Amino acid sequence: MPAAGAPAAKAKYSLLDDYSEGAHPEVLAALLQSNGTQEVGYGRDTFSEEAKHHIRTHLGNQDVGVFFVPSGTSANAISIAACLRPHEAVIAASSGHIVTRETGAVEASGHKIINVVPENGKLTPSTINKALDDNWHFPHMAKPRLVYISNATEIGTVYTKTELTAIKRLCEENGLLLFVDGARIGCALTSAKNDLTLNDILELTDIFWIGGTKNGALLGEAVVVKHPQLAEDFEFFVKQHGSLLAKGRIMGVQFAELFRENLYFDLARQANRAAEKLSQSIVGAGFALRAETETNQVFAVLPLDLVKTLQQHFSFYVWEKYDDEWAVIRLLTTWATDPEQLERFSSIVLHWTK
Image (cartoon, rainbow, N blue to C red; front, top):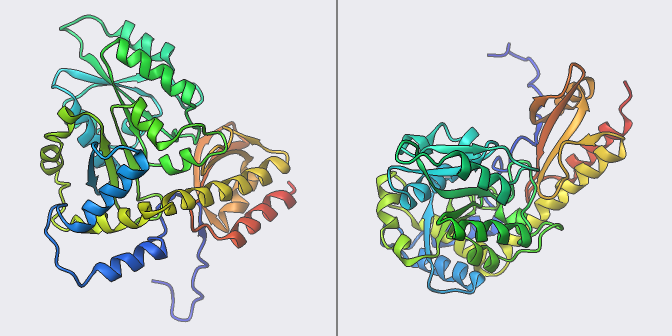
Protein backbone atom coordinates (compact mmCIF):
# COMPACT_ATOMS: atom_id res chain seq x y z
CA MET A 1 0.00 0.00 0.00
CA PRO A 2 1.32 3.49 -0.82
CA ALA A 3 1.96 5.72 2.18
CA ALA A 4 -0.92 7.91 3.31
CA GLY A 5 -0.95 11.11 1.36
CA ALA A 6 1.38 9.76 -1.33
CA PRO A 7 0.38 10.82 -4.86
CA ALA A 8 -1.27 8.08 -6.90
CA ALA A 9 0.80 6.64 -9.71
CA LYS A 10 -0.13 8.18 -13.03
CA ALA A 11 -2.06 5.73 -15.15
CA LYS A 12 -0.48 4.79 -18.44
CA TYR A 13 -2.57 4.69 -21.59
CA SER A 14 -2.81 1.14 -22.89
CA LEU A 15 -1.79 0.14 -26.40
CA LEU A 16 -1.20 -3.34 -25.06
CA ASP A 17 -4.10 -5.18 -26.69
CA ASP A 18 -7.47 -4.72 -28.38
CA TYR A 19 -9.67 -5.98 -25.56
CA SER A 20 -8.87 -3.55 -22.72
CA GLU A 21 -11.97 -1.46 -23.40
CA GLY A 22 -15.50 -2.54 -22.57
CA ALA A 23 -18.29 -2.73 -25.13
CA HIS A 24 -19.30 -0.11 -27.68
CA PRO A 25 -22.06 2.14 -26.28
CA GLU A 26 -24.63 0.87 -28.78
CA VAL A 27 -23.90 -2.70 -27.73
CA LEU A 28 -24.19 -1.77 -24.06
CA ALA A 29 -27.47 0.01 -24.74
CA ALA A 30 -28.81 -3.11 -26.44
CA LEU A 31 -27.78 -5.23 -23.46
CA LEU A 32 -29.54 -2.87 -21.05
CA GLN A 33 -32.67 -2.72 -23.18
CA SER A 34 -32.85 -6.51 -23.32
CA ASN A 35 -32.11 -7.02 -19.64
CA GLY A 36 -35.69 -7.04 -18.41
CA THR A 37 -36.89 -9.84 -20.69
CA GLN A 38 -37.06 -13.56 -20.01
CA GLU A 39 -35.42 -15.79 -22.59
CA VAL A 40 -34.79 -19.47 -23.20
CA GLY A 41 -31.24 -20.51 -22.26
CA TYR A 42 -28.26 -22.03 -24.01
CA GLY A 43 -28.37 -19.93 -27.16
CA ARG A 44 -31.96 -20.67 -28.11
CA ASP A 45 -33.14 -17.18 -27.23
CA THR A 46 -34.69 -14.73 -29.67
CA PHE A 47 -31.63 -12.44 -29.61
CA SER A 48 -29.27 -15.22 -30.67
CA GLU A 49 -31.62 -16.19 -33.47
CA GLU A 50 -31.76 -12.57 -34.60
CA ALA A 51 -27.97 -12.33 -34.48
CA LYS A 52 -27.61 -15.48 -36.58
CA HIS A 53 -30.03 -14.07 -39.12
CA HIS A 54 -28.06 -10.79 -39.40
CA ILE A 55 -24.73 -12.62 -39.72
CA ARG A 56 -26.15 -14.94 -42.38
CA THR A 57 -27.50 -11.91 -44.24
CA HIS A 58 -24.01 -10.38 -44.32
CA LEU A 59 -22.68 -13.74 -45.49
CA GLY A 60 -25.29 -13.98 -48.24
CA ASN A 61 -26.29 -17.47 -47.08
CA GLN A 62 -29.09 -18.31 -44.64
CA ASP A 63 -28.23 -22.02 -44.46
CA VAL A 64 -24.85 -22.03 -42.69
CA GLY A 65 -24.39 -22.96 -39.05
CA VAL A 66 -23.59 -20.11 -36.64
CA PHE A 67 -22.51 -20.90 -33.08
CA PHE A 68 -21.59 -18.44 -30.32
CA VAL A 69 -18.70 -19.18 -27.94
CA PRO A 70 -17.18 -16.93 -25.27
CA SER A 71 -13.53 -16.66 -26.34
CA GLY A 72 -11.02 -17.05 -29.12
CA THR A 73 -9.26 -20.01 -27.54
CA SER A 74 -12.58 -21.81 -27.17
CA ALA A 75 -13.48 -20.99 -30.78
CA ASN A 76 -10.22 -22.51 -32.01
CA ALA A 77 -10.15 -25.55 -29.72
CA ILE A 78 -13.82 -26.42 -30.29
CA SER A 79 -13.66 -25.93 -34.06
CA ILE A 80 -10.60 -28.11 -34.46
CA ALA A 81 -11.95 -30.81 -32.15
CA ALA A 82 -15.21 -30.87 -34.12
CA CYS A 83 -13.39 -31.24 -37.44
CA LEU A 84 -10.76 -33.88 -36.65
CA ARG A 85 -10.58 -37.53 -35.73
CA PRO A 86 -8.08 -38.47 -32.98
CA HIS A 87 -5.22 -39.35 -35.36
CA GLU A 88 -5.54 -36.20 -37.49
CA ALA A 89 -3.31 -33.12 -37.28
CA VAL A 90 -3.37 -29.38 -37.93
CA ILE A 91 -0.97 -27.47 -40.17
CA ALA A 92 -0.33 -23.98 -38.79
CA ALA A 93 2.20 -21.17 -38.96
CA SER A 94 4.74 -21.33 -36.14
CA SER A 95 3.56 -17.83 -35.20
CA GLY A 96 -0.09 -18.91 -35.10
CA HIS A 97 -2.16 -18.16 -32.03
CA ILE A 98 -2.94 -21.85 -31.45
CA VAL A 99 0.81 -22.51 -31.41
CA THR A 100 2.06 -19.65 -29.25
CA ARG A 101 -0.76 -18.25 -27.12
CA GLU A 102 -3.29 -20.95 -26.21
CA THR A 103 -1.43 -23.07 -23.65
CA GLY A 104 -1.58 -26.18 -25.77
CA ALA A 105 -5.40 -26.20 -25.94
CA VAL A 106 -5.40 -27.98 -29.30
CA GLU A 107 -2.79 -30.52 -28.21
CA ALA A 108 -4.74 -31.08 -25.00
CA SER A 109 -7.59 -32.38 -27.13
CA GLY A 110 -5.20 -34.89 -28.69
CA HIS A 111 -4.29 -33.22 -31.99
CA LYS A 112 -0.76 -32.59 -33.17
CA ILE A 113 0.09 -29.20 -34.65
CA ILE A 114 2.55 -29.32 -37.53
CA ASN A 115 4.45 -26.02 -37.44
CA VAL A 116 5.31 -24.20 -40.66
CA VAL A 117 7.57 -21.14 -40.94
CA PRO A 118 5.36 -18.24 -42.10
CA GLU A 119 6.08 -15.81 -44.90
CA ASN A 120 5.02 -12.30 -43.88
CA GLY A 121 2.87 -13.94 -41.22
CA LYS A 122 1.08 -16.19 -43.74
CA LEU A 123 0.97 -19.76 -44.94
CA THR A 124 1.43 -20.40 -48.67
CA PRO A 125 0.75 -23.40 -50.89
CA SER A 126 4.46 -24.19 -51.00
CA THR A 127 4.89 -24.16 -47.22
CA ILE A 128 1.75 -26.27 -46.77
CA ASN A 129 3.04 -28.70 -49.42
CA LYS A 130 6.30 -29.05 -47.52
CA ALA A 131 4.38 -29.93 -44.36
CA LEU A 132 2.53 -32.59 -46.32
CA ASP A 133 5.78 -33.93 -47.79
CA ASP A 134 7.38 -34.10 -44.33
CA ASN A 135 4.44 -35.91 -42.73
CA TRP A 136 3.80 -38.98 -44.84
CA HIS A 137 4.81 -42.07 -42.86
CA PHE A 138 1.37 -43.43 -42.00
CA PRO A 139 0.22 -44.81 -39.61
CA HIS A 140 3.37 -43.83 -37.71
CA MET A 141 2.79 -40.09 -38.06
CA ALA A 142 -0.30 -38.02 -37.42
CA LYS A 143 -2.22 -37.40 -40.64
CA PRO A 144 -2.56 -33.75 -41.76
CA ARG A 145 -6.24 -32.95 -42.16
CA LEU A 146 -6.81 -29.26 -41.41
CA VAL A 147 -5.00 -26.03 -42.31
CA TYR A 148 -5.26 -23.23 -39.76
CA ILE A 149 -4.65 -19.60 -40.74
CA SER A 150 -5.42 -16.27 -39.10
CA ASN A 151 -6.83 -13.26 -40.93
CA ALA A 152 -5.53 -10.78 -39.93
CA THR A 153 -2.32 -12.66 -39.14
CA GLU A 154 -0.44 -12.42 -35.86
CA ILE A 155 1.68 -9.62 -37.34
CA GLY A 156 -1.32 -7.76 -38.73
CA THR A 157 -1.00 -8.71 -42.39
CA VAL A 158 -3.99 -9.82 -44.46
CA TYR A 159 -4.59 -12.54 -47.01
CA THR A 160 -5.58 -11.48 -50.52
CA LYS A 161 -8.29 -13.27 -52.47
CA THR A 162 -5.64 -14.75 -54.76
CA GLU A 163 -3.66 -16.09 -51.79
CA LEU A 164 -6.70 -17.56 -50.06
CA THR A 165 -7.97 -19.09 -53.30
CA ALA A 166 -4.62 -20.79 -53.89
CA ILE A 167 -4.60 -22.26 -50.38
CA LYS A 168 -8.19 -23.46 -50.75
CA ARG A 169 -7.37 -25.13 -54.06
CA LEU A 170 -4.43 -26.95 -52.48
CA CYS A 171 -6.62 -28.03 -49.56
CA GLU A 172 -9.24 -29.47 -51.91
CA GLU A 173 -6.60 -31.32 -53.92
CA ASN A 174 -5.24 -32.94 -50.75
CA GLY A 175 -8.41 -33.58 -48.78
CA LEU A 176 -7.71 -30.87 -46.21
CA LEU A 177 -10.14 -28.62 -44.39
CA LEU A 178 -9.40 -24.87 -44.26
CA PHE A 179 -10.08 -23.07 -40.98
CA VAL A 180 -9.69 -19.31 -40.45
CA ASP A 181 -9.16 -17.75 -37.03
CA GLY A 182 -11.11 -14.50 -37.29
CA ALA A 183 -10.22 -12.81 -34.02
CA ARG A 184 -9.45 -9.70 -36.08
CA ILE A 185 -11.42 -10.51 -39.22
CA GLY A 186 -13.20 -7.16 -39.03
CA CYS A 187 -9.89 -5.32 -39.28
CA ALA A 188 -8.76 -7.66 -42.07
CA LEU A 189 -11.89 -7.07 -44.17
CA THR A 190 -11.71 -3.29 -43.73
CA SER A 191 -7.98 -3.04 -44.43
CA ALA A 192 -6.86 -0.89 -47.34
CA LYS A 193 -4.96 -3.98 -48.54
CA ASN A 194 -8.04 -6.22 -48.50
CA ASP A 195 -9.93 -7.45 -51.56
CA LEU A 196 -12.03 -10.13 -49.82
CA THR A 197 -15.67 -9.97 -48.74
CA LEU A 198 -17.28 -11.86 -45.89
CA ASN A 199 -18.99 -14.01 -48.51
CA ASP A 200 -15.58 -14.76 -50.07
CA ILE A 201 -14.35 -15.98 -46.69
CA LEU A 202 -17.36 -18.29 -46.48
CA GLU A 203 -16.88 -19.64 -49.98
CA LEU A 204 -13.12 -20.17 -49.66
CA THR A 205 -13.08 -21.88 -46.23
CA ASP A 206 -14.77 -24.78 -44.49
CA ILE A 207 -15.09 -23.15 -41.09
CA PHE A 208 -14.13 -19.75 -39.66
CA TRP A 209 -15.07 -17.44 -36.83
CA ILE A 210 -15.94 -13.79 -36.42
CA GLY A 211 -14.31 -12.12 -33.44
CA GLY A 212 -16.48 -9.92 -31.24
CA THR A 213 -14.24 -9.61 -28.17
CA LYS A 214 -11.69 -7.45 -30.00
CA ASN A 215 -14.20 -5.41 -31.95
CA GLY A 216 -16.92 -3.83 -29.84
CA ALA A 217 -18.37 -6.69 -27.80
CA LEU A 218 -17.87 -7.38 -24.11
CA LEU A 219 -17.14 -10.98 -25.06
CA GLY A 220 -18.03 -13.54 -27.65
CA GLU A 221 -17.09 -15.01 -31.01
CA ALA A 222 -19.33 -16.40 -33.76
CA VAL A 223 -18.19 -19.64 -35.38
CA VAL A 224 -19.48 -20.11 -38.93
CA VAL A 225 -19.69 -23.73 -40.10
CA LYS A 226 -20.43 -24.10 -43.80
CA HIS A 227 -20.91 -27.83 -44.20
CA PRO A 228 -24.10 -29.37 -42.74
CA GLN A 229 -22.26 -32.53 -41.69
CA LEU A 230 -19.86 -30.47 -39.55
CA ALA A 231 -22.59 -28.19 -38.22
CA GLU A 232 -24.93 -31.03 -37.24
CA ASP A 233 -23.13 -32.02 -34.02
CA PHE A 234 -21.07 -28.86 -33.47
CA GLU A 235 -23.14 -27.82 -30.46
CA PHE A 236 -22.13 -31.01 -28.65
CA PHE A 237 -18.49 -29.98 -28.88
CA VAL A 238 -19.36 -26.51 -27.59
CA LYS A 239 -21.02 -28.10 -24.57
CA GLN A 240 -18.19 -30.58 -23.93
CA HIS A 241 -15.71 -27.70 -23.87
CA GLY A 242 -17.71 -25.82 -21.23
CA SER A 243 -18.66 -23.03 -23.64
CA LEU A 244 -22.42 -23.48 -24.07
CA LEU A 245 -23.49 -20.62 -21.83
CA ALA A 246 -26.84 -20.78 -20.03
CA LYS A 247 -27.11 -17.04 -20.65
CA GLY A 248 -26.09 -17.30 -24.27
CA ARG A 249 -28.43 -14.37 -24.87
CA ILE A 250 -25.56 -12.09 -23.77
CA MET A 251 -23.63 -12.97 -26.92
CA GLY A 252 -26.76 -12.96 -29.06
CA VAL A 253 -27.69 -9.41 -28.09
CA GLN A 254 -24.21 -8.14 -28.87
CA PHE A 255 -23.85 -9.79 -32.27
CA ALA A 256 -27.38 -8.77 -33.23
CA GLU A 257 -26.40 -5.15 -32.63
CA LEU A 258 -22.99 -5.42 -34.29
CA PHE A 259 -24.44 -6.99 -37.46
CA ARG A 260 -27.84 -5.31 -37.59
CA GLU A 261 -26.28 -2.94 -40.10
CA ASN A 262 -22.54 -2.22 -40.43
CA LEU A 263 -21.44 -1.30 -36.90
CA TYR A 264 -19.02 -4.23 -36.74
CA PHE A 265 -17.12 -3.05 -39.82
CA ASP A 266 -17.31 0.65 -38.89
CA LEU A 267 -15.57 -0.11 -35.59
CA ALA A 268 -12.87 -2.13 -37.32
CA ARG A 269 -12.16 0.75 -39.70
CA GLN A 270 -11.69 3.08 -36.73
CA ALA A 271 -9.16 0.69 -35.22
CA ASN A 272 -7.26 0.48 -38.51
CA ARG A 273 -7.18 4.26 -38.92
CA ALA A 274 -5.74 4.65 -35.42
CA ALA A 275 -2.99 2.15 -36.18
CA GLU A 276 -2.19 3.91 -39.43
CA LYS A 277 -1.75 7.17 -37.50
CA LEU A 278 0.83 5.52 -35.21
CA SER A 279 2.54 3.85 -38.14
CA GLN A 280 2.87 7.08 -40.10
CA SER A 281 4.43 8.84 -37.12
CA ILE A 282 6.95 6.06 -36.55
CA VAL A 283 8.00 5.97 -40.20
CA GLY A 284 7.94 9.76 -40.38
CA ALA A 285 10.43 9.90 -37.53
CA GLY A 286 12.80 7.70 -39.52
CA PHE A 287 12.19 4.38 -37.79
CA ALA A 288 11.40 1.05 -39.42
CA LEU A 289 8.42 -1.26 -39.14
CA ARG A 290 8.85 -4.98 -38.50
CA ALA A 291 5.87 -5.56 -40.81
CA GLU A 292 3.80 -3.24 -42.94
CA THR A 293 0.83 -1.90 -41.00
CA GLU A 294 -2.21 -3.36 -42.73
CA THR A 295 -4.67 -3.61 -39.82
CA ASN A 296 -4.77 -2.53 -36.18
CA GLN A 297 -1.39 -3.96 -35.16
CA VAL A 298 1.81 -1.95 -35.41
CA PHE A 299 5.21 -3.62 -35.03
CA ALA A 300 7.94 -0.99 -34.81
CA VAL A 301 11.70 -1.29 -34.45
CA LEU A 302 12.76 1.41 -31.98
CA PRO A 303 15.87 2.30 -29.96
CA LEU A 304 15.66 1.05 -26.38
CA ASP A 305 16.02 4.57 -24.98
CA LEU A 306 12.94 5.68 -26.91
CA VAL A 307 11.09 2.55 -25.79
CA LYS A 308 11.82 3.44 -22.17
CA THR A 309 10.61 6.99 -22.72
CA LEU A 310 7.36 5.76 -24.27
CA GLN A 311 6.88 3.29 -21.41
CA GLN A 312 6.62 6.20 -19.00
CA HIS A 313 3.33 7.13 -20.65
CA PHE A 314 2.04 4.03 -22.45
CA SER A 315 1.64 0.30 -21.88
CA PHE A 316 2.61 -1.97 -24.77
CA TYR A 317 4.50 -5.18 -25.39
CA VAL A 318 8.20 -5.24 -26.12
CA TRP A 319 7.64 -8.07 -28.58
CA GLU A 320 11.19 -9.20 -29.24
CA LYS A 321 14.78 -8.11 -28.89
CA TYR A 322 16.22 -6.74 -32.12
CA ASP A 323 19.80 -6.23 -30.96
CA ASP A 324 21.57 -4.74 -27.94
CA GLU A 325 20.23 -1.25 -28.63
CA TRP A 326 16.93 -1.82 -30.43
CA ALA A 327 13.72 -3.73 -29.82
CA VAL A 328 10.50 -4.56 -31.65
CA ILE A 329 7.41 -3.25 -29.89
CA ARG A 330 3.78 -4.13 -30.63
CA LEU A 331 1.05 -1.50 -30.49
CA LEU A 332 -2.65 -2.39 -30.68
CA THR A 333 -5.45 0.05 -31.45
CA THR A 334 -9.22 -0.28 -31.21
CA TRP A 335 -12.48 1.44 -32.09
CA ALA A 336 -12.07 3.34 -28.80
CA THR A 337 -8.45 4.47 -29.03
CA ASP A 338 -8.26 8.08 -27.88
CA PRO A 339 -7.11 10.45 -30.69
CA GLU A 340 -5.41 12.69 -28.11
CA GLN A 341 -3.30 9.76 -26.96
CA LEU A 342 -2.36 9.02 -30.56
CA GLU A 343 -1.18 12.61 -30.89
CA ARG A 344 0.74 12.31 -27.65
CA PHE A 345 2.48 9.13 -28.77
CA SER A 346 3.28 10.64 -32.16
CA SER A 347 4.69 13.78 -30.62
CA ILE A 348 7.07 11.82 -28.38
CA VAL A 349 8.33 9.76 -31.32
CA LEU A 350 8.67 12.66 -33.73
CA HIS A 351 10.49 14.90 -31.24
CA TRP A 352 12.66 12.28 -29.62
CA THR A 353 16.40 12.84 -29.65
CA LYS A 354 18.98 10.46 -28.24
